[in-house]
Length: 141
Image (tube, rainbow, N blue to C red):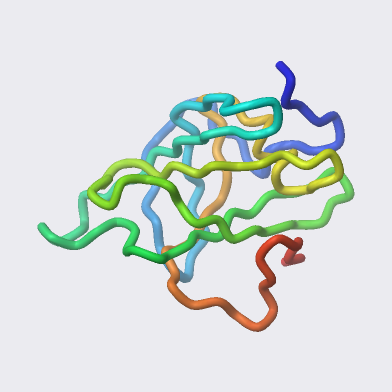
């Protein structure tokens, strides 16, 4: 595979995938359902999520929302990034993220090593940004 990084690893691994729920204030382990390389340094990652508790017309991911994805880098520090999902607005059982992998990037390299069945921690959706979170930069947790 062209997209791998020896310096990063998934935050958590769940080889027997089970659906997780998405919550704006709690981290949940969501299993990777599929991955597809878009080009030499970009991926489309699809994560399984349980949206069964949503109301009939309540979206899993409101328009303009983002999710926080957290992982552990090999330096032992937790890193989080905000991603705006590219999932369809009517998707109720999956979150799709387009991820660009930079050579020295922390989160992109963690996510690029995921295989179906592996899980990472997510929370959201959120339509607000905290002052401490800067898109395009690492957020240490």
